[in-house]
Image: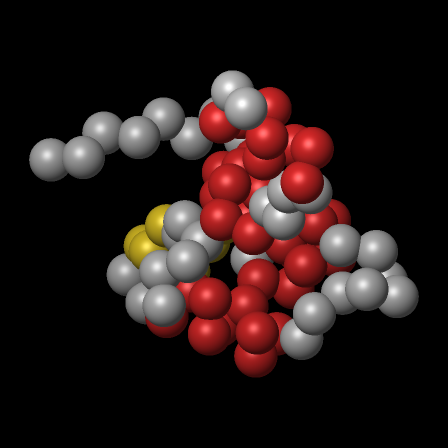
Length: 79
């Protein structure tokens, strides 16, 4: 079975959006549910309840949605 260590406090959907984004740039709850359904962000299901670890979600969003400029991409490839 997958063993993942959760280091932080588990948050609900509304709490996650409040802590992860500014009030002006916060996406909707529908967006979060779509990302959860697509398994684009990590979540923990306990029965029918869904919880999130802030650090795990932040790392997943940074890894999947990071847009690098030309200089950043060139340094990664070694050119």
